[in-house]
Image 1 (cartoon, rainbow, N blue to C red):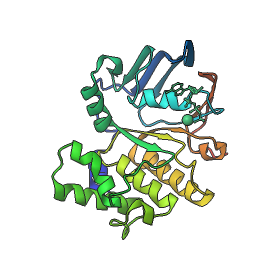
Image 2 (cartoon, rainbow, N blue to C red):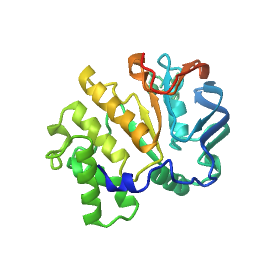
Image 3 (cartoon, rainbow, N blue to C red):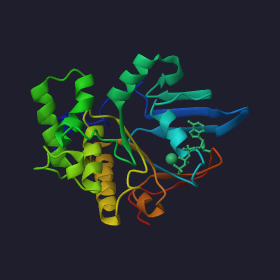
Amino acid sequence: MSRLLVSTPPTAEKGTTGSVEVMVAEDLWKVYRLGKIDYPALRGVSFSVRRGEYIAIVGPSGSGKSTLLNIMGALDRPTKGRMMIDGIEISRLNDRRLAELRNRKLGFVFQNFNLLSYMSAAENVETPLIASGVPPEERRRVAYELLEMVGLKGFERNRPTMLSGGQQQRVALARALANSPQIILADEPTGNLDSKSSREIIELLRRLNREKGVTIIMVTHNFELTSYCDRIWFFRDGRIEREEKRDAGQAI
Ligand SMILES: Nc1ncnc2c1ncn2[C@@H]1O[C@H](COP(=O)(O)OP(=O)(O)OP(=O)(O)O)[C@@H](O)[C@H]1O
Ligand SMILES: [Mg+2]
């Protein structure tokens, strides 16, 4: 169990505003210009997410799920509308401040793992800590702890090619957790995994949410994997068409 995670539970941490609303979106639009045609990938999305919520986004291919997640993760800016992360309006920030915000508050998990192939599992997990200025020995210690937490003790020196897909995604999850983020954004985190590895990743996300109070936003095609979520947003044509609320702990 990571000492970092245990010592600073995100639920106890006050955000910039001290608000329980950790993400607020107001009328988000994202318009892509394709030749001479403007294509709105997001068409007026509004929501608020409370600290410690677990939200799933489901919907057809091309409906704008990744576009939304990238804006929620400050990887992209909306064409119009406001996206607030922990009380900070992201379009007001320059690129350096955006990168800082991402590094401090957010952890990302992607469908294709996005690990650096020339680095070991431990080195991959350490990368966000380099940006935070954590000294090398401390980085290594945290990386080993996190790899143990995701069940990869003994695999610290393996390069990604020497790991299964499920193991690679667990490395990616450990990396996402390196800076003890308040929020994890996961885009199809099980999209390239078999059903057993998928369940393991979902179980890890559930534990992070329930035991550490980490807010989780997860895009998935697989409705079965939404059983631990508090809310499901059904996305269509660049909008949240419908929301379904779940009682805590209710399984499908
Ligand atoms: N960089 C881009 N330039 C132009 N159009 C884009 C760009 N990124 C996404 N789009 C378009 O925006 C729409 C939404 O794309 P997005 O990737 O958000 O969909 P998605 O719901 O994540 O789909 P999938 O389930 O296939 O991942 C699509 O029509 C896509 O073609
Ligand atoms: Mg997508």
